[in-house]
Length: 189
Image (cartoon, rainbow, N blue to C red):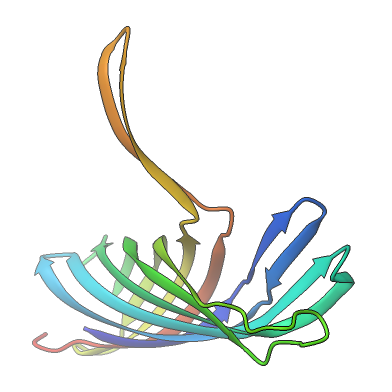
């Protein structure tokens, strides 16, 4: 399957004390290429792009919310999707892992006197929606998704009264979600 999409992405906000940095809501586009690993299960590679504005409110640099820079966010994700029906209307849910790249341009020099660095984060996400097949090889995709760039994480090993324990933890203070629609092109259907 090849699925180009366009939609609306809700931005995110990073608080630090009473101050914050905010990526505004904006349009987003993407494309997903997937193949059926087994009936009703897809393995997918997804690229999404969101171009927006980065805004700041900082009691020292910018006491009221101000434009800081143009922000571009690229998402490169690998994931899996489970379809819950084999008919013309196919609800689905999926999960993804990958990278998100935050980069800026047109920095407001009245607020900061240098360019902002690009940042790359490990990311994960969840999606759900429905595909409505119009023919055997063309359909419509409607979905919602939540994306989490990971800002902190770790691996732990410990010994307690219950015996040894190990684990991996990851967290994010930014959550970005959105809704999109697109066309589904199935090959070999």
